[in-house]
View 1 (spheres, rainbow, N blue to C red):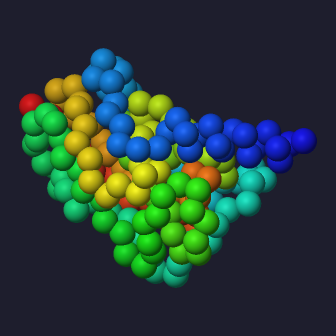
View 2 (cartoon, rainbow, N blue to C red; view 1 turned 90 degrees about the vertical axis):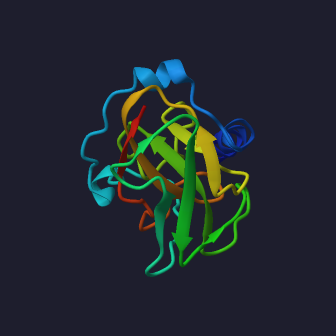
Amino acid sequence: MTLRILILCNAFLVVCACGDQTPDESTAASAPEATAAAEPDEAAAGSTLPRSASADGASVFFIMPADGATVSNPVRIEFGIAGMEVVTAGDNRPNSGHHHLLIDTDLPDLGMPIPADEHHVHFGDGSTTTEITLAPGEHTLQMMLGDYVHIPHQPPLVSEPVRITVE
């Protein structure tokens, strides 16, 4: 019964959370500042869901914006990946996944599906670029690759945080 509920939950995430999404400017303005993230293995300590393996040496990173950049709306973001393939959510190929943009938040529980809200934007359609609108001020962006059911890989593929200022 638990597996059935999990599958229904993940199907819901794929339908509701995939695609190019723009965070609501009013919620982005009130978002808490990002703080140092927990070590990946600590965050997943209580995990019971299976996790897809990431390829040795794989990484995700921002092509743009650069750390410390001052930008204006809409903010153009380009995701980079090395050593793995970007595919759509639901595609269970080895060494593949899709991007998730974390905005002004810490890393989520690494053993559970990545949340879908204004701080966790899913790109289950396989997008590698987007434009978002953020409230003026400082913001922290981070990327995380999720597998076919939005669960971070083992080990997780997480970018270095990028701090930007929106004019």
